[in-house]
Length: 206
Length: 221
Picture 1 (tube, rainbow over the protein chains, first blue to last red):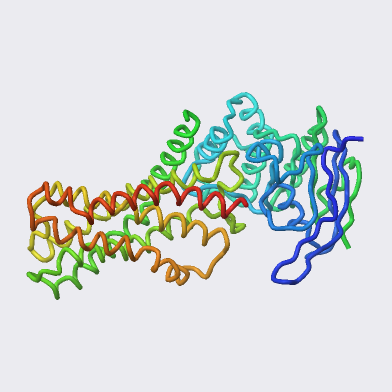
Picture 2: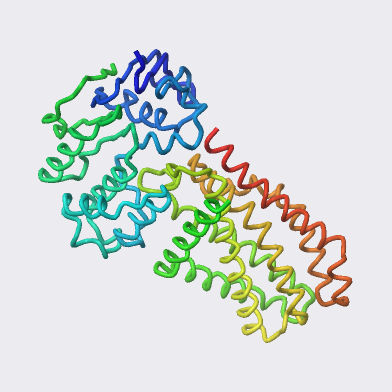
């Protein structure tokens, strides 16, 4: 069986302190998995390894049987990592931020952008600079950018941080319908935000 | 190749837009150049004014460059563009170009402030001065941008880590220093064909090529 993602014997140490070792799991296509574990178990580190933000690790990660170390730049189109904290340019407006990242990813999806703005209630903030926005609104913008990239494998690290109940509902609805054509979602969440999601499986870290 | 220039232009435009709106770097720049100009009072009328000028530019560059690189870092402490689906050498190259613009602006501001405050015309041959400033900016921008972005990525010990790169920029500074003395002291042709200037151009080409590749290699591999 060909998995969308395979993690084999993954291990990581920082300054000779082992964070985790012998992590193995597979994620099949069209699925939503949740990474579960206490603080410091290495959830964020695993997600950053899968999205090739950390390259110094032991073991192997395969995306559709291809070792992610050999995929190159195109990996960043197939796998997208949403960080817990919103990453925006403070002195660009909400719309300019989204347009900048869309152009960087060579995306031209005005309809989808407008639709996501509407879903997350961002229309009134389009021309406000990022530093004028609340953390929750910034988070929603980061989510919109991740969804516009539309990767095959979406990694969401604490996606519910800063979000209100309405936005959590909107996000869950999107996540639930996201895996299509063999794609998938991996999320880590220490809140109760994902409790209403119909998960394909749980990955437990001790 | 078209993609390369599109991304470079996109990041460059974004940086200029942010700078125009924030203006904080420009304020820093102005205050620093004014402060260094006041120190320059000590050297009024002496032969050391050109050297003081480039020394001032170097110090201001070190500080403004790290500020500019820090703008690229999000709350999570990561470079915002680290997720970009393009080679990071392109990102680094865009930043270098942007810093060449900033550095050129630094040169103009410092030389103007020094001249106004001291009442001394530092360089009489404007063409040679502009050329040397440009060549100086290319080299210094390449090295500083690459290292400051690398330091931001590895969360280095802030500005003190810059001490580590002084030995690397030393040959570059010596070549600039040698060229300074030739700006006004000889006819244009001698200046252009001097060993120092030609070595400086060679250094610039080398740095502009190597630095983005080094950045991309060290960050993603």
